[in-house]
Length: 103
Ligand code: SF4
Ligand code: F3S
Ligand code: ZN
Image (cartoon, rainbow, N blue to C red; front, side):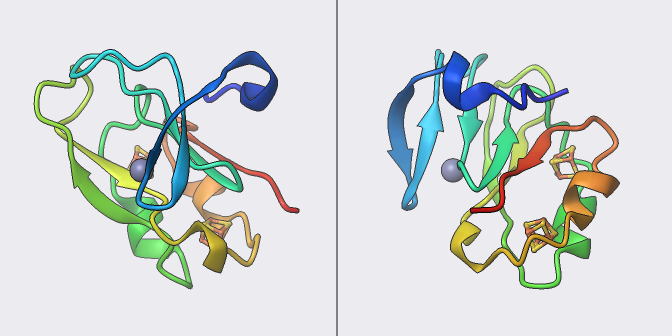
């Protein structure tokens, strides 16, 4: 599962679509964690899609990640500022790739 303490254990190494990327990142095999309020561990996500289907405010968008060993697309928290902290995505992700940190 995603490290709930990622903000202490990792550093921001990049920015993507307005949100932080927490390293390490070594493309294409290692992609890090995208987002902070809504954080998705891209190295755990296997493109199940439940988070995209169930989020009531459409926080997630697919991003293509060719060459990643788990899956070639990931749920990107593109609209993390819209999150209403319902925790549905955390509950439905089969591999616990998502951590939501209410402000
Ligand atoms: Fe969407 Fe709820 Fe997850 Fe926030 S906690 S990203 S509103 S499903
Ligand atoms: Fe990925 Fe979990 Fe969503 S596997 S697509 S973060 S439900
Ligand atoms: Zn991203």
